[in-house]
Length: 426
Ligand code: SDX
Image 1 (tube, rainbow, N blue to C red):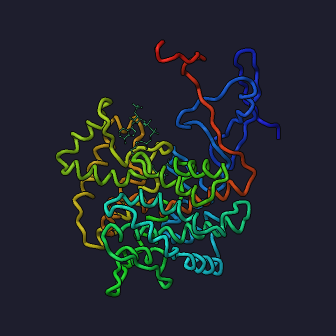
Image 2 (cartoon, protein in one colour):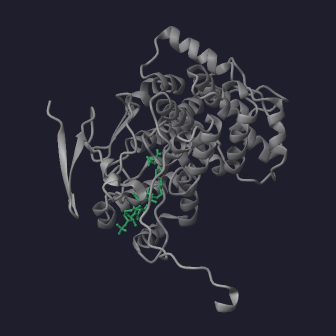
Image 3 (cartoon, rainbow, N blue to C red):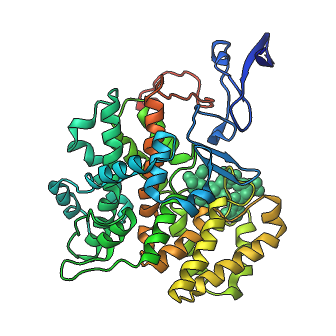
């Protein structure tokens, strides 16, 4: 098949740039020749840039499609559990019964953390934001697991992935317990991944804790809906950190830091804070007007997306789960009513319709997390916990194939060369 080419002319240059086609999605234009011909591409925010080739997740923003290794997110959320999705993201296929059983056992065997890691928590104030703690303790894992840091060794990469997937719930629950002044709970191997997390979050050593199956299922679904999302800001951060050869624990800590921002994973916490601020349906119009006002920095948190210019398919599943969980718990949460009203008004408003601003994954997740009993400050920690498998899958995919250190260039608009002047001449 003849190779497709894009023609580019600038100055006295005439370039023929190769065009590559993927399995799904837009073609890409290979611009690598441009630098050798005296120019850089310019794409702040990487709106039009494909940073890599990947087989893990596909998103069609126009159609609101999200596939993990080809499987639609709604089918996975309905039929799989989180560890099955982890296996799929890591190995590319759904596990058979034996593979699943072995994977679950392997993850169970890595859920405990080194006892000395507990000391790291003592160094934080009790009211420290749990994402600040997670940035620290996840990066610190590289100080404890020297036996899985040789990134060129496939087995080391796999063990590091197991450790990260298995230990994130333990570390996350420890953040919550530390904030309460309660003792840390050890993981239990007789519980499922989500049951274990809820047990470590809400159990106490003084009595048995019975995990509510409705909440465990909702928690597991939330983990699935946050597992991976192509080359988002935090995943791109993990890939960039990994491209320098940094160890996997340091790379994931970098991803956690990037996720924390309110424009990214911090939005779920920001949505609940926003709903608290709006307070009542009668104030919705005022806040929608603020969101539309160019001079007002206020944005409707949980709305809009760089890629989805249609409904975020995860938000659809999340909204249905929200109703289901609240109904099953017999909870009538006024914030859900407020959120539904806000969505209804925003979706009828030309500003939001014209800019294709739909609810995203973060718009409803906070309401479910609150119903499960998770405090708002822990929402982004839950996102980081769930997204760890996506981060390690992309990191592993990159390191398993030929790669180069990521090193973007710039458009320099600063001063031309000038000589230093003594202070007497300034
Ligand atoms: C996640 O990338 C991923 O995949 C991320 C994620 C994942 O799973 O990893 O999906 C998770 O991060 C979801 C997004 C969570 N963030 C929020 O809910 C915060 C609120 N949303 C916005 O900050 C914004 O929509 C972004 C950051 C999500 C997207 O920003 P873009 O793509 O840079 O879009 P933009 O800021 O250029 O907005 C385009 C226009 C602007 O107006 P104009 O300058 O064109 O006139 O839409 C407006 C924006 O002002 N706009 C909003 C808005 N979001 C965009 N106006 C009001 N409220 C909003 N929420």
